Length: 115
Image 1 (cartoon, rainbow, N blue to C red):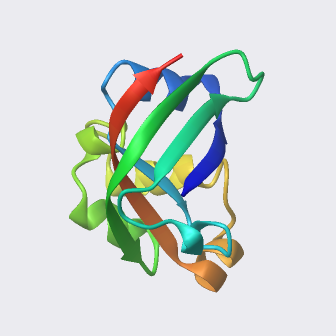
Image 2 (tube, rainbow, N blue to C red; image 1 turned 60 degrees about the horizontal axis):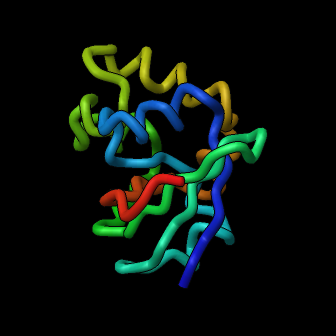
């Protein structure tokens, strides 16, 4: 199955440059359909460029804090930031209420192609 996800420029560039190998999302209805081996097309918000990746692992957690305690920062593109700083970064995209309602998903991937 193929899934489409839009990304802001910063995370898109991190994936493109090999500095991010795990995408972080809520474990909502859309993400519950993702399975190992699926293809995800990450597309810039302006739709000018995309990267195709293959799902290699799915890491489900109750919270971003729990995920960050398990997944090293260099895999999620957040390097040496503290766990609190990483959680604060995720608040740009998701509220605490959404996090509690759905839980979170780390999508471990391998790049297939860049277009």
